[in-house]
Amino acid sequence: MVQLHKIFSWKDLLNPMFYIINGGFWLLLFIVFAETGLFAGFFLPGDSLLFVAGIYSANLAHEFLKAFGLGGVHSEWFDLFLLVTLISLAGILGNMLGYWFGRKIGPTMYNWKDRFLFKKKYLNDAHDFYEKHGGGAIIFARFLPVIRTFAPIVAGIVQMERRKFMVNNIIGCVAWVVSMIFAGHFLQIWVRKQFGFELKDHLEMIVIGIIVVTTAPVLWKIFFGSKKPTQTT
Image (cartoon, rainbow, N blue to C red; front, side, top):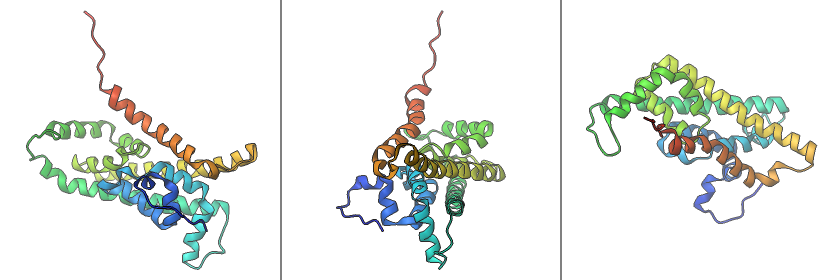
């Protein structure tokens, strides 16, 4: 078992290996749940954590099975299926909690007075957006850090239809988990065979790369998406 011998620092919370080493599979499930079900979970490293979990899939699955006296049940595809199933369930439940919370506070928010960071127009715009792109918004939000934390809450606030939310919640969560877990697992195998080194030895650079790739669309939208083309006379 890998041991962590270092003084804790707050930046460790952004390092997926910190959770794998200190909490293993159980903490992994909680992180996925919290990132999509709790306001405070927006900073957690969901994408990179799942990618690393794919690399350590055998270790994590063995940890879970051993807790139930099933340590001898072990195969590559069984490990992957177990991780995908349980992690997807955690993510689905997290989104459901966020959606439920949004539905509870939504009606009240429509009675709030406009403030610096809140305008009733934002709710109306969000409602129209989800009416037009609701299913796709819930699915694609899974792949965008920070946004995936607040997407189900906003969906609840604007009273998105429950069945529509649940169907797309399940599709988006399973697609996200499968893509990240499989990417980490099979890329590790491919790199080992092709280049003879372990991704485990270069996790810091991989995590930075994942953060850049997943946050780039969000940053682009923030800085360039709202700019309107200038009209020529």
